[in-house]
Amino acid sequence: MSTVVLAELPGRPCPIAAALEFVGERWALLVVREIALGATHFGDIVTGTGAPRDRIAARLKALESAGVVVRSPYQSAPTRYEYRLTAAGEALIPVLDALLAWGKVHGVSRDDPDRQQKYRPFSELKESR
Image (cartoon, helix red, strand yellow):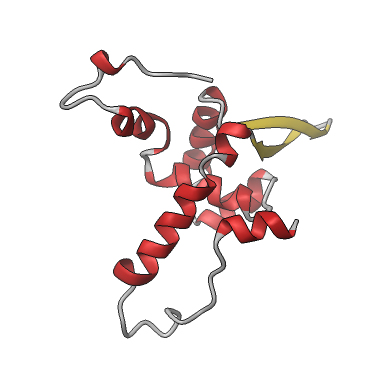
């Protein structure tokens, strides 16, 4: 897994800043979310995030380099890969749960009709698999 030297980070270097070097770009955590929800193929991850294909390709490469995801071929000719979370990626599940809880209270408009949907914490989804 990649790591960061704190002294090389700008501003006030700390472990939060180091973590954001790997997952601080918007699409990175959405990629992790999609894989945690069971989307393992590139096209499914793109569809679930709503991001452009090139952005997701770049995020997957960065997350793989960081040791957050691992890819393995599931088809040859043409070669296609599936993506899985590593232990480091699984360790982000509580972060997704915290963002989900915060977003439900502070990030979604009170009059949004979808606000009351039942969003289960990712840790519950993992336990049910």
